[in-house]
Length: 193
Image (cartoon, rainbow, N blue to C red; front, top):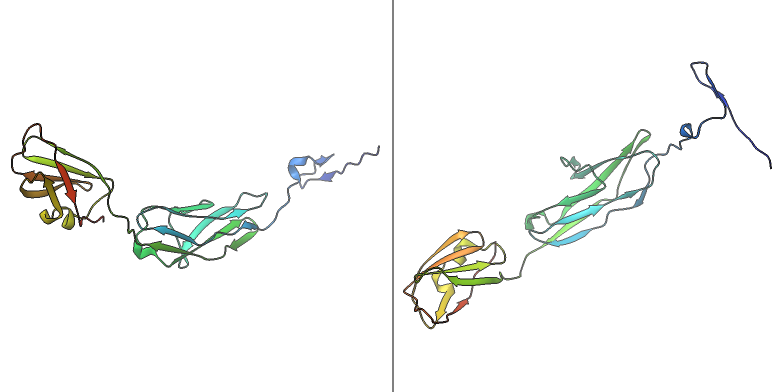
């Protein structure tokens, strides 16, 4: 079995023999192995784009939109939360840099679809004999959630007021409820934000 080793002289005059493996680094420009892809999401949800690189040198990532750097978007994955409908059609790319240069990913487009799922009623319960609380799974539009015409109780009880307790909860003011009676709340026309 043959053995081979190499040596070199450093600028300081020191000779290293054999050359240590820590000095044997392959330097390459950033290389994209997997490009980001277009993404479609429902409004007010989370969108993400990812790019995969194959390099020995650690790269630096900078995501951009319309050629402008996105603040804090310096990871291989770009995560956008609570994406508004108005963001549909926005383009993104990622500039990947190391000490030898940089490369820009293919541009990708974010498509945002309108949320057409109606709010889900989680629970309805009385608070005393003159109030009924309605709690939804997601935030609702105050204009539709406080419209008295969108609610009915059976057996019939008059509803005289509706107020938002928080973005997902409506407090109804009703005429006096009867103890021991089960009521059914019917909700129509309440929309989410």
